[in-house]
Length: 382
Ligand SMILES: Cc1cc2nc3c(=O)[nH]c(=O)nc-3n(C[C@H](O)[C@H](O)[C@H](O)COP(=O)(O)OP(=O)(O)OC[C@H]3O[C@@H](n4cnc5c(N)ncnc54)[C@H](O)[C@@H]3O)c2cc1C
Image (cartoon, rainbow, N blue to C red; front, side, top):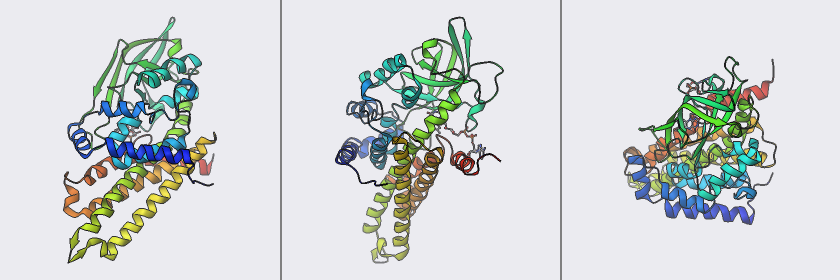
């Protein structure tokens, strides 16, 4: 496996770095974080340049590239600002489900909302009482004549209050058990009965929109049911195989950004008459941080590459997400420590990285759930 970037991949990576460094200014990052502002203008600029439609097939107006290129862009955006990076790159969240399992008509309609109108998508599985245990979802999608009626509450939904449509996981048949009977419905935010309420006071990624969505007697036709009714859980697992390496890339980007801040700081901060970088303890910490980042990056690249070949491996995607998530938390923790008291106040960007990093161990499956996936693949049935 050779991860030397092709000239095209290098161009994409450099373009992403340039965009992030120019557009995510310290003032905007600070304001969006402090006031929990969704940076709609920057999101639109990133959209126009194609950064968030990398994997959408060219046929539907996307860039037609692979998860590997998406990972490169993700790393660069999160290296500068995890919050604004998330707002930009998650603005097409859920579209993989459409690409993988949508009908031709659904792709034509909804992927084009994304690529031509710069629309925003969302993906909603989590409910107040169904998080890690996805099969406990209670939202109902019940057939009523020619239509389906959707009722339920979804929580922690990225883009929930700024999206044009959301892919909602619900239970298609009353009484059907657990993993079976779950179905994805495509629901437009303008539908009657759709209500989103922004969730405030998040610890991190505060520039990114997160909302609770209430669905009350929302009516949709057959054309808004994704793939086969009852297959939703299995679609979701396949979706995660393709999206977890992207979260791993988010974590690698956060770790890299925090590391660079720390490296710069320890070279300039003097104590006991010398830069704190001269202390061997500092040097060992830097070496440890850099080594873990590189290991997380290689695992992320391998998982993304595996998906790009069309043979996604669940355990590899989970290993990348779990290891990179822990790396982001480890590195940002030490980056704050190396800043001493200055790392503990908002004047230095590092405290924001520290807060942003934690989510990498939580969303799209907590690190414990990743370990379950890995262990199940290792052990098989017993
Ligand atoms: C900012 C943000 C954005 C999000 N975006 C989205 C989104 O766009 N769409 C969406 O659907 N969801 C989204 N989520 C939800 C996220 O995926 C869930 O929070 C996550 O899956 C965990 O579910 P939970 O919060 O209910 O925790 P719980 O499932 O209640 O877990 C609590 C703790 O118990 C542990 N645990 C649970 N089960 C087990 C087990 N079997 N073995 C060992 N430990 C276990 C967990 O690992 C965790 O440590 C988002 C969350 C946040 C915070």
